[in-house]
Length: 328
Image 1 (cartoon, rainbow, N blue to C red):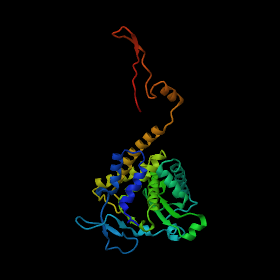
Image 2: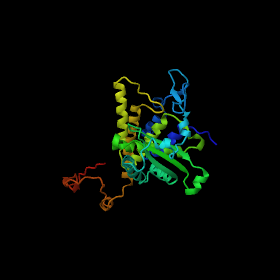
Image 3: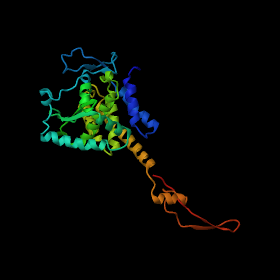
Image 4: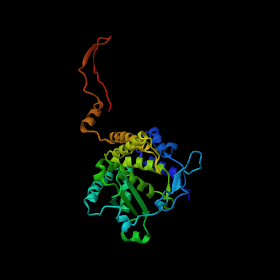
């Protein structure tokens, strides 16, 4: 079996979801997953005291470090029935939970309702997964998380579901609804990534994994006619505030807020244009367009100008039709 290479995997999968995009545009977008600007190097955190402490630290200048590393937290899976987990989320019958989850459910239906490759992959994944959504009570700012695991053979036999996915969302009554699309599609992007890796490679990670989730999440949103950039605005504003106050803009396990803001904005613009081009290409002609094409009249032509009479050298009368042609 070929050795799994995370950078190649993320680039290949994201490229699949950049449907109808010009090759040069796609190349520039995919380069954001693997570029140095979007990936820091990490060294082991020698001062780690326990699981709650950071596993890695950002490597110093000139220090050896890893771009691709294994995160212990990706090997673990939350016990949603434990008191430890329940204490961090709102009860399922609470207003806080229902407010956020009802909006997430509505959004999820839209994300799987089109024939794009990313939407069809998500639809197939959800059909094979036991997925639950929870709302964290200890997050004061827009955030999300995705835990993914392959179920045991015994569990698979019970209901035919291959995977278990737990997605946590922030409390929208605190953050506002406009961040939901960016957060939910981003976390589903992680699920798509994990589901298409070998089982023993699911703990591999790099900062570019976040860029992949931004890009694939934006593809999910755009193909469903949704704008996911509310979350990007928050991250960008946080970055701007850090710069203004002279604070460090680097964050563990993710590119900085400005890079993430650009991920969403660049991907949204490119994918919106690609979607528009695909729709025009596959648009069925109207009856008028068909009739006009038989008569040799372009469907995009403007109304012909009045005919003008002109004499030729052999005194024959001819009529010239001045017709301007345009395109959308």
